[in-house]
Picture 1 (cartoon, rainbow, N blue to C red):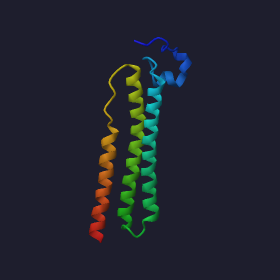
Picture 2: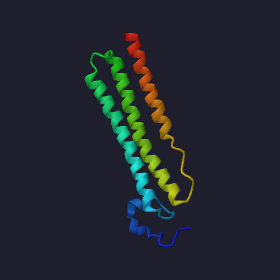
Picture 3: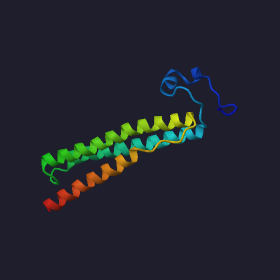
Picture 4: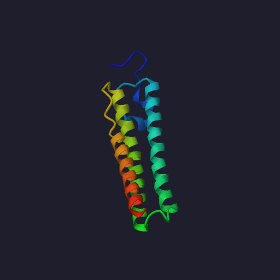
Length: 132
């Protein structure tokens, strides 16, 4: 049930908003903006992984054999890609949950980031230990 003054004509939100977020009640703008800030934080994390993968491939000539360096770079870039895609779905699921007064969904992107970062670090540690 919408709070007084919270009802909004779907046409006022625009065509795209009506397609992406159909139905439900308009949440408090503070919650929507907090959800957006969280999305942007995930995007910054994704960009850091992308930049790290590119930097590894471009500047780590002597640190790893070429095939291994390329494999690690691709893995780091793929983690960035997964985080970026996960951020979009996370934002959408949270926004939909707020609009329909449901509990917030489990943040599945967190284990992806944690396990991905740990895997990348473990590979680098093993490679440095073997080559050193």
